[in-house]
Length: 149
Image (cartoon, rainbow, N blue to C red; front, side, top):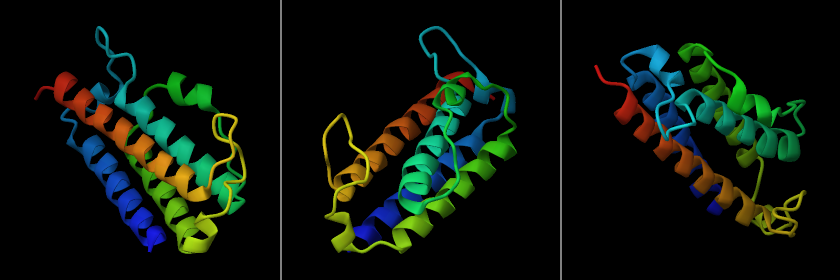
């Protein structure tokens, strides 16, 4: 049951991330920085898909994804369609991994420590869902502030 809730939440928020990117009137504003807003929507998207591909794909799904966290925040001007594709790809990875899990497996320890502590998979995957939601809110705020028609 918890697995189903997680699948629903991740699917919902990754869909919302795609919608946020699609709502930009001017594609170049996805990469805009202004005053105290230092993270672009594009970099936040790259960070989220990198995070999910690493912690779901590499760690739990044994994919060959290799994360470059620094690049998530330094890369610029990736096309909107590519960001959307990366978001869709990450959503498929998350869904595939969660579809292969049971609630009993969520009670087991996540394979790598979080903040130097052992935590359950359930705890860590809920943490990742809140991380996604937090940055999704930043993308929404970025769009509403910096993308005027």
